[in-house]
Amino acid sequence: MSKAIWVRPGLRLPEDLDTVVFDMDGVLWDGQVSCSYSVVDTVDYLLRHEYGLTDFRPVTLEEQAAFKRAGGFNDDWDLSWALTITRLAAARGHWGGKVPTPEVLAAESRGEGVAWAEKLVPERDRPSHDLAREVFNEFYWGAERYREVFGKPASHVTAPGYIRMERPLVSRDFFDRLRESGIRRVGIATGRHSHEMAEPARELRLAEIVPESAIITSDEVQKPDPAMLQRAMNALGGRAGLFVGDTKDDLEMVLRWRKSDPGDCIPFWAVMVAPEPTEQEFYKGDGADILIGTADVLPEVIQELRANHAAGTAKTTEERNR
Image (cartoon, rainbow, N blue to C red; front, side, top):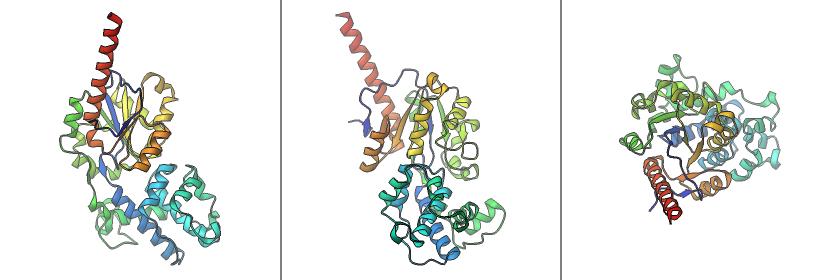
């Protein structure tokens, strides 16, 4: 039985496939719960403490997932800010004073993310991006670690941070198995910022596997700009690759790469981590090449596809020789 949930019909990976570039959160590292809870608390804090609102629909994890499928948010700071704006807009009478359901709201954004949210509330009535970022960081890191990371005391939070909930999503032998599948080059292209990479890099032993120059963070370039892939490939020098992600912006980056000059020379295929049926249908229709439930099965999926390719080539040769 295949380890992949779905493979685009007719997909054949080339023999010279030698590279995999990974997103971090939701793929190699479970930062989704910590970041999602930080988003929830950031929006709640801003609405209550900055605007005095008490009657609003709380942000849910499902709502965040819907917006990430829609795209347009580079990071959870942007998402926190935009979700705060939706509640402010409803409080001012937009949508008849009631925030639409998550799916309807995400569909209305049409993947425009922050640009869409900016249209909902006049600039003078919006929270600053810097404030949203600061509050999010305090909830994420917690008061004690916030001081360690940023060199100043937290102003809004006194509790421990949600970062304590994070963990790897792949097994200890994952990169060994990946190498056995024929992958010799590994890169990272993440929406995380550089100061957020220390813990996952240590736990995943990335220093042993990924060249430092091939770890591309949001400080350098932001998804879905294919320049993020370009920087990784400049560092790795691969011939053909897979990008493994879990959001619409991850997929969009690969699709844009294919239309770029480097994309003509170095092919990339989009592998999406999509454990939920709703996500699977979405990504099938939006251009994904492979769907998997967890990144941990990727080495076996690559081996299966290589074996299928070899079997198909052998069959074709046999038919020609008849």
